[in-house]
Image 1 (cartoon, rainbow, N blue to C red):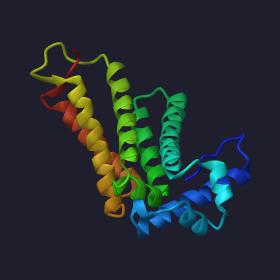
Image 2 (image 1 turned 90 degrees about the vertical axis):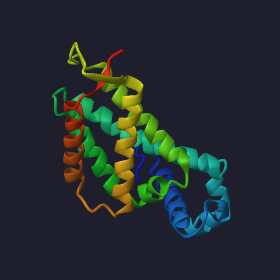
Image 3 (image 1 turned 135 degrees about the horizontal axis):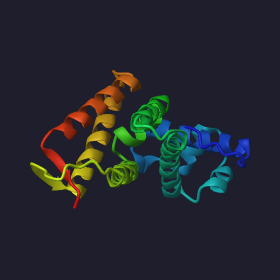
Image 4 (image 1 turned 90 degrees about the horizontal axis):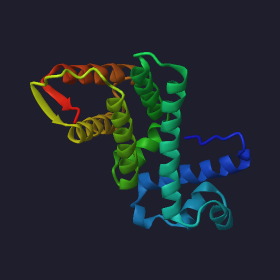
Length: 203
């Protein structure tokens, strides 16, 4: 999982990647509470001093890993938004996001699908809530009379949870479908939901 920046020293990036990989490998083997800086540095083949040059402790490292995850997904969203204003924008974001998760499946299986570190699910939930909220605020095609309306916040919680839950199940099942196929199914489900009477209350 890369956090590449044009101003970041490649040696720094390489060291952080070694630390991340070591931490993920250890999480596959033992409980989080048993992971120590010593174990991480031994697995990463670096010394303790090097670890502390990058992170104050393991909790800070976890927070920064979560920040990296959201930063990369947010970059995908912003990049597509800057490139396209078409109706296919949401579809393109979903495909690219799932491709990114597939490319970094080991990271996401351990850090997200295992649900052993809640901060990753919490951060991703907030990102989805923000994205869906922004999308709903930009829509102006709600019918004037709704057969049955649900509050917007409930609809957003539902949509965000559904997306994340599907991604988690997909990872736990070793991604039996390609990102493109899964994106198609999620889009189909989204449009079916829009066509039902469970419409979002714009108030």
